[in-house]
Length: 420
Figure 1: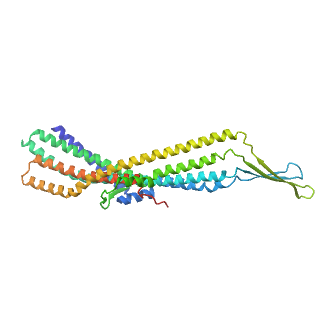
Figure 2: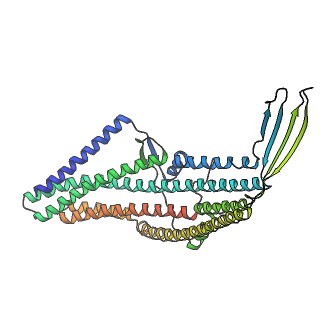
Figure 3: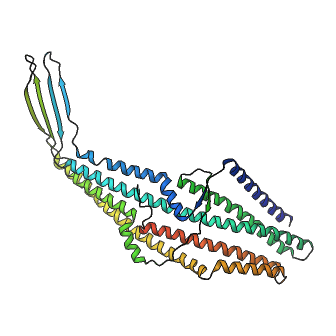
């Protein structure tokens, strides 16, 4: 018996130490406090997440490469003064086969659209992470409040149990069981408190806010009922899923690449204009014009192999797109089942007014125990049921919120589409 009492004491001391350290940190750093809601979490992620800004900058860089590819190479200017009194100048321009520049511009343009699609997908993925992180924080914050209440109650029960045991009013095995419940409650509070800190740090990383930032839940999030249809969500995903958009643009890149491959080994042109300075009067004369054409001796073998390689890459891109479409359909169907199941559980709790009912039942149990109409063991069991029911409700709400977030992402709901 002494062992279990000592175990409970150790847990209580550990809790006090953790809370004291947290208090000292808060006093020293004076952290900022953010009132966090579901919409606020998405907003902060869109504004501050570095991965989003990196993806946007890469997309901007890809767009900047489109126009330069339409221009030919810079001309070469050469002036020869090796012979005293004479000067020779030469302007030379290398021109590719007509259409090569446009083909390269098509490739760069397709790459730019692909990078835009990747930037959009990155924004939606970060919003998904922010929504999931919010629900993790929401659940752990609610559980923390429940466990804090439970810890106060368990301390009081532990004293009552000890007095009954010492007076011989209660069997030792029941005392041991309750002492274990006390120890488990303290351990659960410490574990959840640390998990809550992890949630806060995760939010800081997503938002790029200082490490000491403190979050408090704002208004209670209201979740819509689940009334979606699986077939409609699949059709929507085929049109709006941002991951699919990346693969579709990658296919366009390969189409443009195959077109350029058919032009790569056609003749190139070299145009030059020259003149010689007359040493007698200083004027330029003997103008010359030259047109050079490359002779693609190995054109048939090179072009056929390069076109074949480009065709294979295009075929691979089509298969990649098809594979991603199948994967998205699977994810939508899986997320649909998860969201539907999570909603049914949450709706049962809410339609039965679970929070109000369990609160009234707990108040009734406390009154019955004070009036000696309920035994201590029944009272302990009622308290456990009360805590477990609250925990299950908030877990169900968080699970449904995360299921909706994942389904929105897969179906291509407009989350994080704005790009300034």
